[in-house]
Image (cartoon, rainbow, N blue to C red; front, side, top):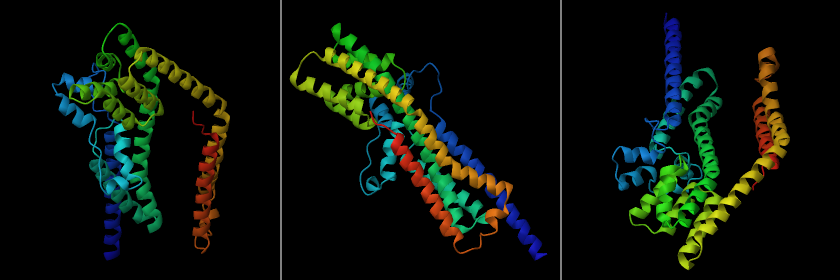
Length: 323
């Protein structure tokens, strides 16, 4: 009777833990995926906040949170997390993000520890609880930054047209914030709001360049900083810069097309060992299961996993070109 009761309790714990883990996983993914916009008419998050009556100080505090300092800022991964969340266009705080990740890790580990051995359960918990959310954030960040770079030449040409007809620079920046969609509309809107709040134009543009971390935006910051100090035809400089950025985008697309075969080969060679392992385990469970108790099994599996990851990193480095 006691054995039966123990098995039932374990089964209930597994079912409850599985349900809670799936619920937390879907909730976390939904929290990461949502954009926080409820009106399709709003062309950017900044315009939506203005439409709701938010003042400039509130907009800056939400869309441009202060940088964290102290011990946490020097941790390799966590220290970069505020910048990743900001570049991904997510307003969730770092502490709240880490809390959800820690909660998901504990839940997944609790479920996996019943089925798997302790080291594997720890790896599964950390992989699903931390690695998957970080990959989601990085994917959103890369997508948003790519879209921002693609919109930047059009935004600069709009600024140049405004400067040629005699508009001040801050007015031209404000027109970009009103006319262009997210993400360039929100970022230029923050520059316009900072200027309205009393910041100098070069400082506001430099903060924009530091916030997004893109080389093309650094060129824009340098151009405006030099023009602000020495004077000159800024409209012509911005127009040339827009052409340079557009040519760089074209060059990147050509390089991606030329290196597509190499990138596909890298993905195939990296995924092949994993596919072979999974297929062999499904079709012949005793192939690896028969030697699982051997003392060399775990070291060999760890070595194979490390070599597979290194293979992926080396091949990715060979087919990844910076333009």
